[in-house]
Image (cartoon, rainbow, N blue to C red; front, side):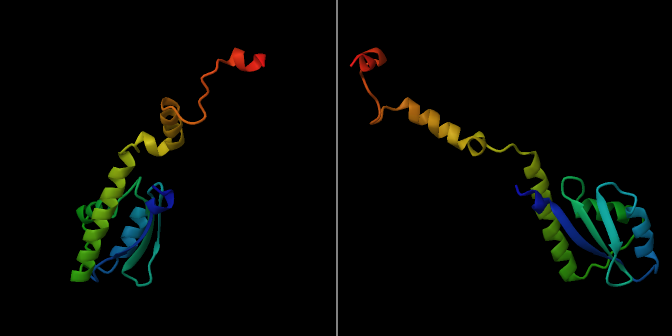
Length: 133
């Protein structure tokens, strides 16, 4: 997996009430390691950057909701976030799955297989007899 695919940039949009949610969330999220947060384009939004190896959008949203934050979820936003949650979950679980050995050592595997089969370069004359000529 390409390491750049693990770095995500997302926008969190909060409801209008209470008015200072985005600012409180900004202060709360600023203290996280391996996490970047900045104020968004609107007063009720935050721009966040993280790696799937450390965080997920679903986990961040659930943690913030437990603290009383409310997100602005229109139908489109709910569909988009559901898709994001699924994709990040798959990526996270793929990080834990070891790659098949043949992908890492494909040349080695083919060389060993080639050595096991007779081919046109095989000479039946022992090396001592070849040097004696």
